Image 1 (cartoon, rainbow, N blue to C red):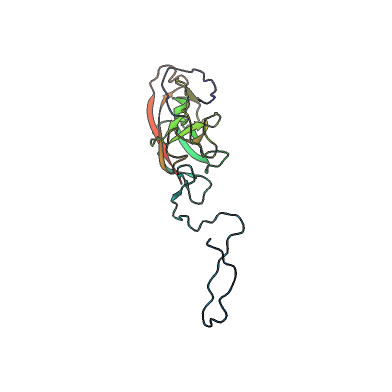
Image 2 (tube, one colour):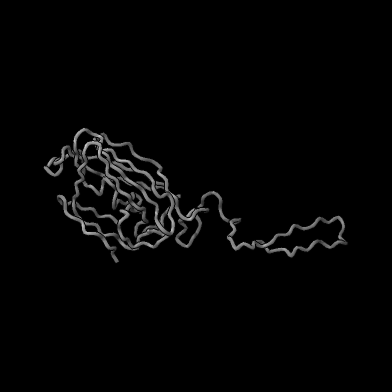
Amino acid sequence: MFPTRRTFLRTGGIATVALLAGCTAGGDGSTDDPTDEGTPDEPTTSEPTTGEPTTDDLPTDGTPTDDGAGGTRPTGTGGPGITLASVDDAPDLPVTPTVEVTEDTATEDHPPQLRVTVTNDGDEAVQVGEERAVLFAYVTSESGQLTLLPIDGDYPAEPGCWRLTDGVAVTEEYRILTLQPGESVSQLVDVYGAAGGDGCLPVGEHRFESTYTVGRGEDGLAGGDEGRQARWGFSVLLE
């Protein structure tokens, strides 16, 4: 079943954005036979009494363990943690994109989360399109395993796993973002496993890239300016 989506307003021409929017046995405390002189006591062990799971036989090198979700959660964590593995240099355009981690671990309540920000560092207004692309909303990783979705949506994913169970419907339109000099716009995006992907949130490095166009002036792109195109991206590490 497709998720509930808010209605998008058409703000420009048509473009297609089609993205898939996941004891050992206890001893009894007895001692050796006292008649057996010179024989050292055998070490004894006892079963844990706290009810907490033991980790004696779990790998300690970060090898993912089988958590019932395809072995996608590494040893010692409640869920995959996310870090930025690399970030591209900003293109030589007035608009500067940046990315930061805002939720660094997947939990039962929320998936990992990023904030993408674009800032007009120039001295005149600019227009940027497509708006969702430059803010990395509905962008899927090059691996096809992860998808970035705006936080205000209702998506078909199992809490704690965060892999999509269905594709996410996205409207076909071209949105234009206008930025005044010094103005910034940010978008929070949650990290979901793509529908049909491997496991929940597959550990490893995943790269995201997006292409956008910058036109000068408040009516740059809307007024027919072809603008200048750039491609920018970053890689995240789930471990």
